Length: 308
Image 1 (cartoon, helix red, strand yellow):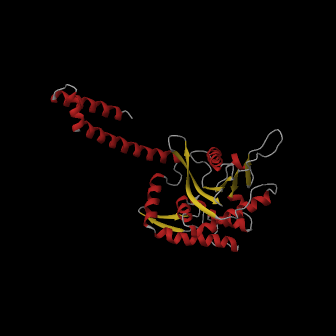
Image 2: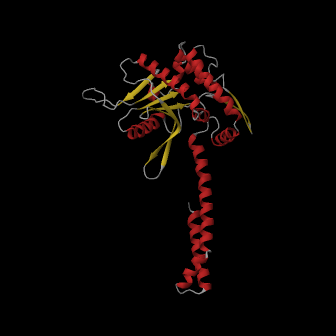
Image 3: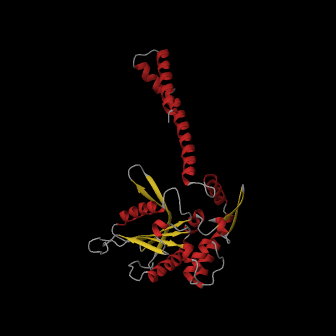
């Protein structure tokens, strides 16, 4: 995406050079909307998309966000008993009940395909909603044909095949082609062009407010020392074009090495512990026999670890 854009928000200095930051950079988005000062800008942007879709499909039941909101970034869904998590970019909670999840997707072919990951998130969202709306909006910087099917907007809902009636729970997954949307000259098209980095100074007053919020946040973002650390770490594992699976493999590999190292240290410490030695002697072994026993157990445990 970066190579095709002309107008980054600016640059952040990293050890290996300056990095251009565009509006859809995931770290920047999470940083920005952690601050409630920018929540209304997010509401404006989201409602522009929803209103455009309502014009595209007047029969839709999706509503704009008008109540009191709070925003959660990198919202974590708990999956099963193993405490595995899945993260979404942003979650807007309206009046403490209704949720709109926003995903800013830069690449058409991530490690887990969009059509699979979005359904995974959708199921988790409605499962936690207790019957309240839990809508998904996926803003796609590159078209994903499997879900867009040549359209600018698509929205998938639960529907009965026999009666063709909608399910009572009307939550859905909306996909938006930002590239198609950015080609016209209305406020929502300007928003799409701004998000893609095609323009930096929108003419629409509404979109200008959104752009100004992004620019104001970036001024703080680029000066934050912690940001440089996060971006450097992200660059270490995820350069432009790097397959997400490779990055994940590096992270898991390092974590695995750390776990094994820590476990090895723990085993040696415990094996040499006074309590362990006393237990063996109490069981009838001499001191020499107990020490030999400890050494045997240690060697076996370390061998098992090295097989991981």
